[in-house]
Length: 231
Image (cartoon, rainbow, N blue to C red; front, side, top):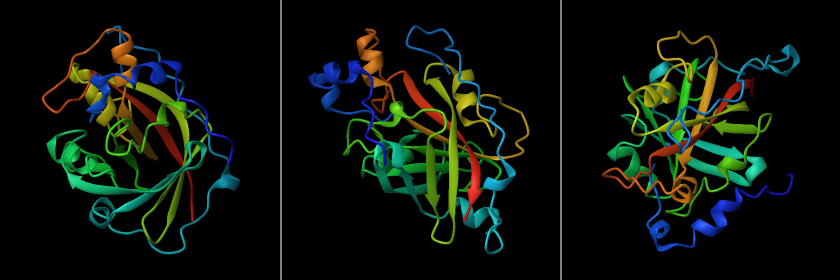
């Protein structure tokens, strides 16, 4: 495993403030309010990387409701529990799950799919509070690997894109939660993942102290990936 890359320098200065002590539950737009250009997401998967599953895939309902384990070697994260629930990203049920120091994955009409399924597998967790399991998420780069185990299979995703989500923009939220991240209404053709955590340090450094009723700052930092292999 390569050495952990530091998160932005602003985190060190901002996290010490009392305003951050309460943590964040929460954020495609930068702190200035305008859309930040997203990193190109399209990276073709070499055929040699793909591996056939060893057994038939679970039904969509089983996959969506099965607790999984998330590992991200580039940031030293190993076996973080991902708890599924019916809802949408960073709503009250999801926030309560995150407050237990684990990750939450919404499914249903306003949520995503399960691990390895075609569509958007949504995973959210705290960056500062409840142990801050995703404190180093912003350091992920294109090409870094994310592994999700559901007990029967390991799904390996490759990070391809960084996005920002604004809690004050319905369009931005729709882009985050879309079956094809960033493209609401587009039909998915591949399995993708969105890992999301709050941009509290960045928002505070920019003088943006807005919070919703759950303590979420305006923005979230999302890392989007594409499934490359199944074992």
